[in-house]
Each structure stands twice: as C-alpha cells, then as structure tokens.
Amino acid sequence: MIVAYRNRLMAAFFVAAGVYGAAMMLFILAFAQLDAADTVEVGFGLGCSVWSIARLSRCGVYADDDGIRILNPLTSTRLRWEEIARFTHEDRGACRAERVDGSAVKIFGVQEPTWKLRRSRSTQAAVLIDRLNLRLAQRVSSVA
Image (tube, rainbow, N blue to C red; front, side):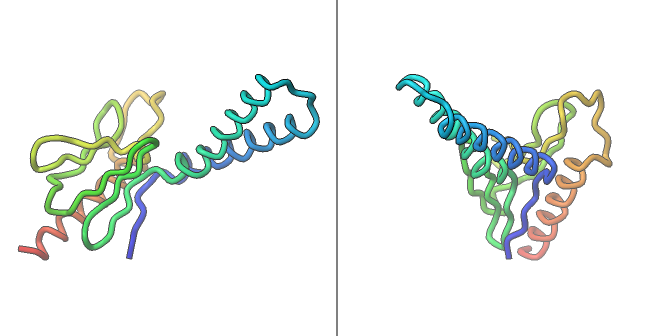
C-alpha cells in the first residue's frame, strides 16, 4: 500500500492555479485573434497550466514497503528504506531525506511557506517529517 506524505494545501493551490491558467488560455484561444507569436505564448501558458496540475500538485513523498519515491517538480527519486538515514525539517528551505552516504534529496512537496519567521514542531511539514521518521524507524526495527 502506497502512502502519500505531502502538503495538501499546496497541492490544492497548484491544481486551482493550473485550472485557472488553463481556462484563461483556452478562453484567449477561443475568442482572441492571435498571430503566430501570440499563439506560441498562449500554448506555453497552457502547457505550464497543465504541468501545474499534472506535476506540481503531486509533489511529495510516496512510501511503500520497499522504500520511498520523492516526486519533485523536475525529478523523481526512488530510495530503498536501507538507503535512508533520516528525514530532516530545517529552519530554512525544503525538508530533506538524508541518505546513509551523506547526500540528501530535497522534498519540494513537504515544506512550509517561507514567510513564516519560525518553524515549530506543530507545523504540517514537521508532522509529516515526524511520521516519515517513525515509519523509517519501524521499517529498520522490523528488518533487524
């Protein structure tokens, strides 16, 4: 069973922005007289809107029994549970999955707005990271 760990409010925002952008671009295509350059620009806007719905709204961590898949805007990283040291929630920037080799993978779908001055342990991102660390600890203890 796959469990998703992601900021649902951020996902809803990207879906709403994508639907709004797509509707605007389709309205422009339907009712405006466009030359070739304008059509390319509107097509680009439509593509960005679809990308917002199809990719940005799905960003997060997807965990199953074998490991996790971190879906970011431009990349998708698959890690086995044995490759993960811990999940971190930093004061600044995106949350991270730290590998046992010392490298880290940013998690775009688990973050808080940057306008907040301080992150507390009760934020949605902190709760998601705590749940991921708990699942990692359970997985490691069941293997040992």
